[in-house]
Length: 124
Image (tube, rainbow, N blue to C red; front, side, top):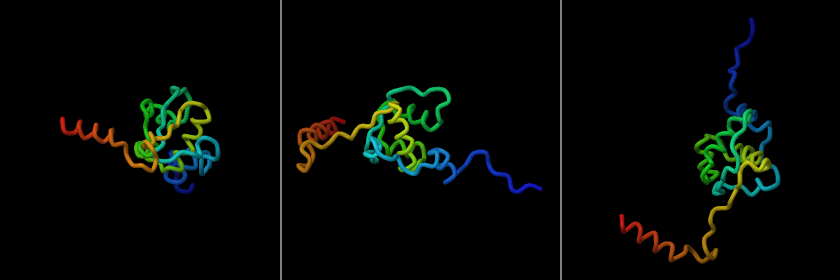
């Protein structure tokens, strides 16, 4: 009699190992600067035979999406998602952008922008 049958689809840590090919981080290069606020934008369409998670990233990032939002949609922890994003960055299939910096770092938010937001809210 054989042992207990194993599911065809790995779950938990096994799933992450399979998704990343055993890698635990994105390594060096452009992916090393990724953080949860980094915006990801697709620069190419999915191709046949592409890993499902890579396809999902490309599909969801047609419009800019932060790494945090993408991780929530895909149900993946940051370090696993960073490995997948590094693959797509290296292939030139996505672009990673820093979020829009505050004008004059250290001076606080842009007063004109806050006034525009307040004006818009008052019109609602």
